Amino acid sequence: MLIEINDLNTFYGLSHALNNVSLNIKKGEIVALLGRNGMGKSTLLKSIMGLIKPKSGKIVFNQKNICGQSPHKIAAAGIGYVPEERRIFPTLSVLDNLKMGIKGGRINFSSPEAWTFEKIFHYFPFMRDRTHQKGGHLSGGEQQMLTIGRALMGNPGLLLVDEPTEGLSPAMVDTVRDILLDVRKSGVSILLVEHNFKMAMSVADRVYLMGKAHIGYSGTVEELANDPKTRTRFLEV
Figure: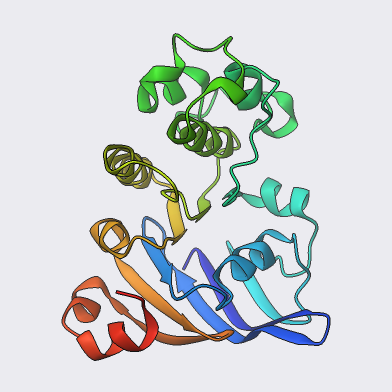
């Protein structure tokens, strides 16, 4: 198992944001985390990434408990994060945005699995001719892809992706979907938070559904597709 989360509890003040949350992801999987707004999906990603400190529980990644560690240590362990707000550096060039994702400032060219600029340009062709363009001048969809590319430059084994298609056109949604599938083929596992049910179901292997602060359902994509009562209970679809 690549990552196992067991009985995770996270609070915002006195508010119990995650209540004994448990899930796991295997190597080479895309796992979708779905649910209505305010259920705790983004909080779970931030808790994994160390941006919020859980009060209790375990997050075991590559057989090491990383729960409560600082974000830079978790990134160094091999987890990348694509936040909902994208958070590119708008005044920096596309190339400099990508450089910000490189761990230690150096690319490990000795590894055939290393993400290099050339590899990024293969998956994101528009960046090749726009390396010197400022990130803030890109479209919303292009900024989303830049954020994914920046996270990949850290060579993660697991990518946490929060609402990647929010506000994008249908054509760009399809592009992001294809990119996530390509990233999975490259060997990177993905935990995907996504409001677009159809898109999530088209890429995921398994699905977790969140109720208020807890996991209410887990199953394969096929099982959820054949369970309309569960979809009605947990999702706005």
